[in-house]
Length: 150
Image 1: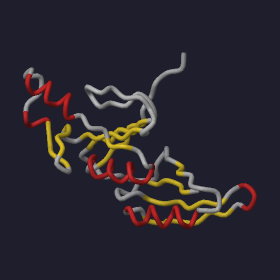
Image 2 (image 1 turned 180 degrees about the horizontal axis):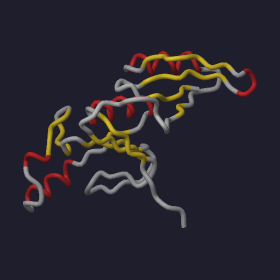
Image 3 (image 1 turned 45 degrees about the horizontal axis):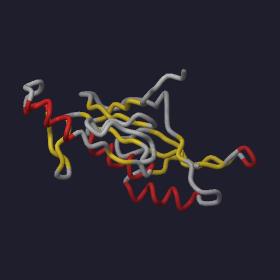
Image 4 (image 1 turned 90 degrees about the vertical axis):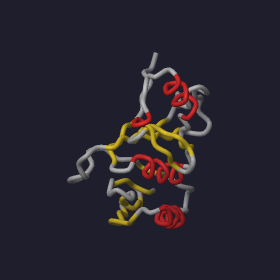
């Protein structure tokens, strides 16, 4: 049986980076509100463990996104499929990523994809054209994490 996984990305502002990537990938930001209320009521977490973002309660320093067609736990809001988790860390990003996402758009729609991503806060770094092997842009998300748009 294949293993389940999620990609965890260090961040300085997990909620804001989750918003960017949810919009970029057309994913959904997970809503852990029901789980948080249960944990608060049971005394398992304190108010210092939570924050509010866009009018919703969330875990301080954490945010996740999931593919809208994948299953998820309705009590916790946690996805059981394609999922990215963002976690705040104290240090800034230093150096090149050792792992990155490739975002693929419609065939022939590279410029439209890149412009949409820029509108969400991404920046272009360098265009790569390898002829028949591929054409893509290396970009950075709002926190400077590299990714490719193809």
